[in-house]
Length: 116
Picture 1 (cartoon, one colour):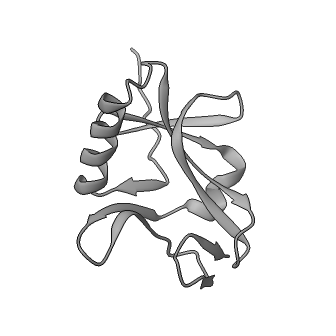
Picture 2 (cartoon, rainbow, N blue to C red):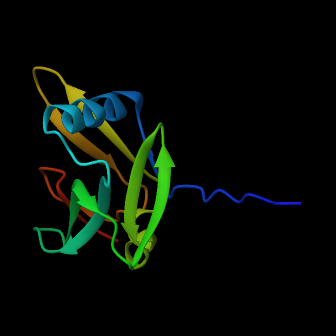
């Protein structure tokens, strides 16, 4: 008897974000072996900046699947990103990806960096 274990992604994507990411993958002809890299890096006015882009899986990555999209995340970044929701806004007052991070203790005015 075989048991399959599926890892729950520490991040979630709204339907709007998922639709935009799939559109971008098609438009940019992203290779099949690439997925969405979600992470953090030091910098920005609040301490950390978000990483969001298409990339190959690295040996330090955990792999998840959300809505048919492969998600790659460095294991060390999970503590900062657990519970985060990524949304996509396409309005007159805001356009782009938005990070709703419950772990952030401080954010900058533009929403691109945070501290935890």
